Every structure is written in structure tokens, then in C-alpha cells.
Image 1 (cartoon, helix red, strand yellow):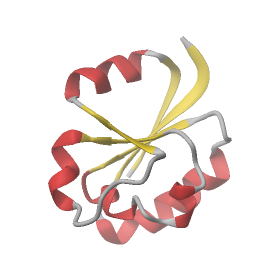
Image 2 (tube, rainbow, N blue to C red):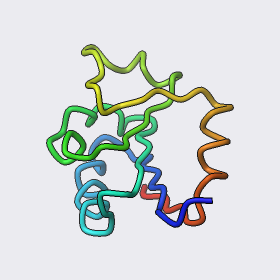
Image 3 (cartoon, rainbow, N blue to C red):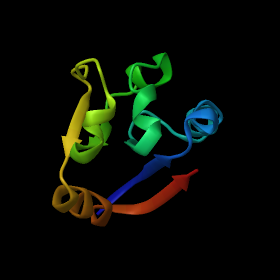
Length: 94
């Protein structure tokens, strides 16, 4: 079990920028983040691009018009469940 934190960002489009600011102030380089729902539209945001461990759900990919960068990995629901269980702390931002 990882001692780092998994951040789940699942917010409306209009609230995602504020969630990213909150996440950036709380996280460190060893933490992971999962962008879910409308938050996936911010996958090209500079705050996300600087982070090395970024995930998106495979089912949300149809919201994107551009390909994912190399720092972003896709998750199925099964691998998402496994990922959540790997972390001791999980914080949801909405």
C-alpha cells in the first residue's frame, strides 16, 4: 500500500480549474491524480502536464478530441479499483 495520496478530480467543467488549484497546493510529485468526467477536458492543462502520474478512465476518452500525452495513462474500471486499493489515502475533489 502506497504512503502517497491518490487524488480523484471529478468536477463540472466550470469548477475544474479551482479543483486543479486546490490539488496543486495539496499534492507532491509522488502523488497520483485521476481525472474523471468533465475534468478530463483539462488533461492538457500545464498543471497536469507537469505531473508524472496522471490517469484517466477509458470510458471518458470519448470526451477528448486530442491524443493523450505520454504522462497520462488510461484505466479500465477494474484497474481503477485496483489503483484505489493501492493507496492509503484518497482525496476526492469536486
